[in-house]
Length: 510
Ligand code: ADP
Ligand code: ADP
Ligand code: MG
Image (cartoon, rainbow, N blue to C red; front, side, top):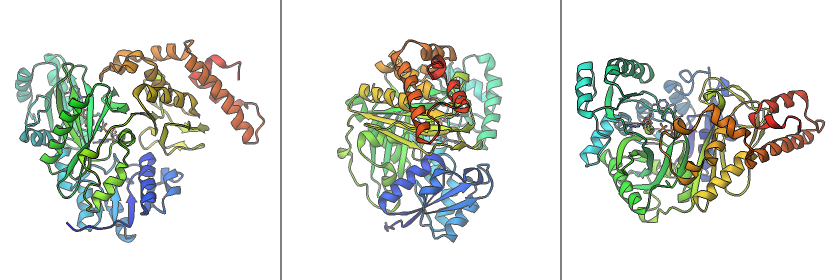
């Protein structure tokens, strides 16, 4: 295995993850370049890259997913390596192959690995070969209604129809009623085709109220594979993660060792190289079942970095250069507790409707135990073409309750006006007794959260919310005075702030 030092790296992504990669490259002394679409011409990642190349157009298809154009930029600018971030081309085997063909390093696994694990059925087969049990289901794709009904009889209701190529919580349907199977099956096939370009679907037993627990994996090009413990990602909506933490409140040392060993086995079964994630569902009896492996850096990787004191992007780059893993399994220890919340430009009071607009005021929290991975800034306008994630707020404490308290403090301190965000949702979760006790499953949001509940919470006599209102008002007035504006709220700002649910009760005070 020949080592190759990366001198110039291109980040083929946008938003917070582009910045995340740029930061580590800077620390490692790697020259780092970036890409931007027309809609992203005012993006923060451009400011911090050494050079940035324009991708004409706005849609993902014409810009961040444009393989020929990106490969061409690499060739013209003598790029040694490309980091794909997550989403976009991160799990695109053709992209990895196209770079490999040009002698450019793809910071990630081989094209073959991406292809194998990218198909949930192939991944389950690889796992089964090394004795790892997945969620019970069909081994093969289900192509006809007849075969589907036969499988349904064996697996028994409820079942889940899943797209083999699915991702991002899409391409899944729960079936609870046999009479509806035929409709669901056809819908699942056509949705899968539309979203992932393949109508390959399969059936899996639907596990009621499971916990989603995943393991961070690192594998080098010399065949060494280790895990960096688990992340708890059960707080989801429509099968998409909203907040994550490490370690999991239900994983003890013994279970961690057991699941970690199984996770490494899954990665070894396909000769995995790079950073990856092995995902499991843990049922109510405490048994765990493999569901899939993601062949990329995950959105929620910072919680692992904080509790294991690592930099996963750095490890990815070192692996891509051909180095051996810089630490062994015995050297991985979990210290303290970390929680990440995804800050989306969505209105939690209106069924998480994505919102657009400009961040008129943006004053992020700071201080002990806070990490903010975000590409937002005051005046930033959210483009309509990409996802609604504006950042990730992460806290670290010596134990779970201290991480929760820090998160509550940070959420209260966070001032964003101009667009609705998921901050109130996260405040609701942090204050919920079941969340605090660690008693929850992937059904938490469905069971406990509604517009009515959150309104009640926001208007309750709860001290936390009151304090937040005062903080918003005080900081806003301070901010306006700093900006040489009269230290009183002008009508535009007043309208913005009054629109925010936190301030509703305090109109007069402002
Ligand atoms: P998970 O896929 O387990 O939810 P992440 O939340 O880390 O993991 O997903 C990373 C990002 O990539 C998210 O924005 C998600 O919506 C997106 N994503 C993941 N897989 C796909 C896919 N196959 N197609 C489109 N988007 C995807
Ligand atoms: P994706 O590729 O979209 O991330 P996953 O297979 O990882 O798809 O599943 C995403 C989420 O969907 C899980 O975290 C879980 O909440 C739910 N889910 C997936 N499979 C099952 C199942 N068999 N039973 C119950 N819930 C499931
Ligand atoms: Mg998943």
